[in-house]
Length: 217
Image (cartoon, rainbow, N blue to C red; front, top):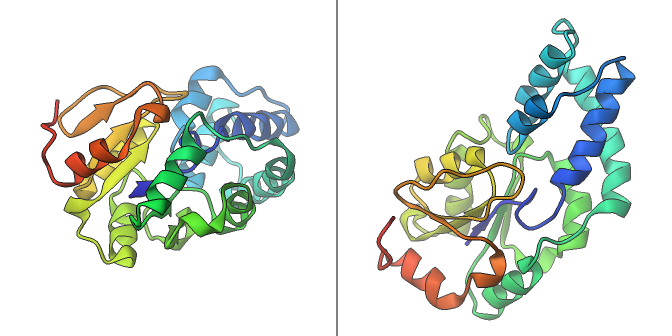
């Protein structure tokens, strides 16, 4: 099992929204809703490029902006993180069934280490962070790395995502994908099983997907 974090296990996209809008205001601008939506599921570099362009300050240093945002997000993660419906229960079900799981996120290690204290380290045999790969989602590298760390063929893995960016990454890697859209809509396509909530995910569905027994829509 391969789990995305932001928007999938945790309602952290709302927390990112706070930090990103504060950063735009720090620079004297206002982040537009279309620009914010374009960032969902993306990596830090692309998000900073979108923000800078949106406030008409493309000359700004992405690393400086990212450092400011990470510092602010670390504060927010300590108090504002909330579970997505069914997420904690699904993690426990997967763990109790002895299914190896990995956390696969575009978020950097510094923030993941804070968030994982909320999630619980015990659920995961591996964690892949956005600053530990050469290319983040939508590139397949994060999911391929997670499968290698679990020592499970990617074709036997089920990835759970909430964003088009994450879905693209998992599909390109070769995993079966369950998409539970949150802030950004996910277009149904071959290999993607779109559900309304994690509360409807159970062990029989996961087993069927990992065996290829459930036909892709």
